Figure 1 (cartoon, rainbow, N blue to C red):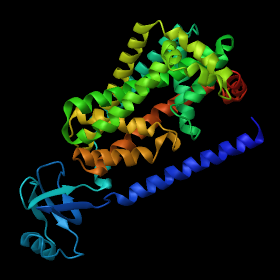
Figure 2 (figure 1 turned 135 degrees about the vertical axis):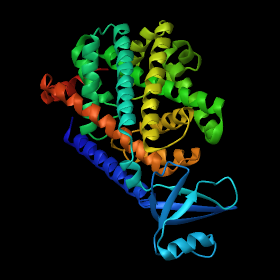
Figure 3 (figure 1 turned 180 degrees about the horizontal axis):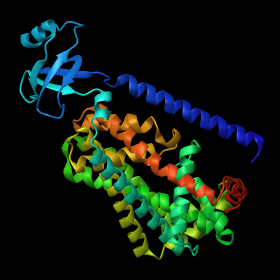
Length: 400
């Protein structure tokens, strides 16, 4: 890698970090850091700050309103009297009728109130999800004649997760995984690299398909996402078809188009590797099943976190939220999706009818749980040190 390329890489990484910080700061500025009491009358919603006394998840609480600013005349007299006297205001949740009350916990209260049991279940589901993803890649390696033990695939995956944590800009550790697997199979470099590419594509395809199926069949508040999510699924399906079907490529004369590209030779070598999977339809189906299992487990992790915070959305809502949120977060916009994920989760939770603060809390806590697992991958550096990464960088350049 030349000095100029290295400089551009550092500049791009710095931009991504700056974008992530800016997004996190903006999301933080829009969140409630104090508890809020909401009074809805017709189409008007009035918001006052204060402190919830008791368990905010209940249908009835006491709310101690801040002394300033004074509530205006649109608020019920009982609320204004309670503010002036400094006494807690007893209120019941009832937003379905005119003049109903609701309340929103501030971020400190949300994080302090998580249930440890749900947090344990969330970590367990996240581990299960990674194990299913590892099994999917292990099977693809066997098909590509790049045999590897399941334990070694586990090790490479967790190494990739670790470097995704410490090196800005990687997506799911795929680059580091590619480096290591290419180094272990130098005689089949294009095939080994193709397993990483196809593993990511199948995973994303299944994720988008799961979101599409749930949104189109369950409806609910997230029904507004039907068209955009359905369009993305159709586009991704077309992409998978092009990758796995040489007939489709010939039909649309894509081979001729590829031949005119600057890196045509390398693309064609990867294309040859993809042919291994074209006649293994059941194996691809099995990979899809593992992918769906992986995404259901990850969704369950977010579901347990959300309900540990006090959220009451249905599991089907979480499937839609996590699927859409994780697809967008996987784009190489910011390191590990920080900032982007929090913004998307907040908007999707609000769209589903839940407080945006809970969406941000779920996104942040989910990333922290994933960070714990990623740090475990650093233990494998004791047997495969960082110098191995530098030695393998040249191999990835020659992989195709």
